[in-house]
Image 1 (tube, rainbow, N blue to C red):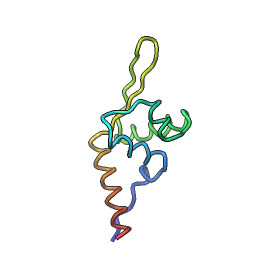
Image 2: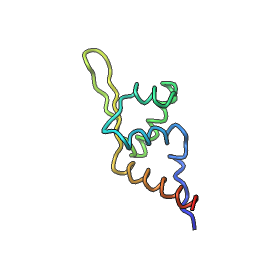
Image 3: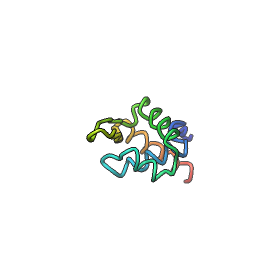
Image 4: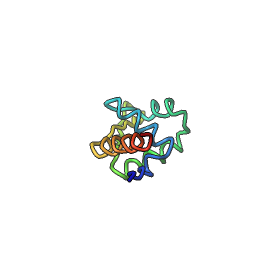
Length: 93
């Protein structure tokens, strides 16, 4: 019996964001936007969905007068991503 793929992670952009965050301590919004080649609006919506699910933590701060938005993966998000990857491996085997 196959485990169902997490629909939250099955989105291309959300999966890309999670893949990036699995490999870095944190990533700024601009970095994620460049790496995923998404629009600011779309990325913002997808980050919000991941944050509401508890998969990532978003921290907003200021550097001078400029807003800084940084994200990092939560323990729940790390486990969800690892489960998603394992489910894919199970389908392949």
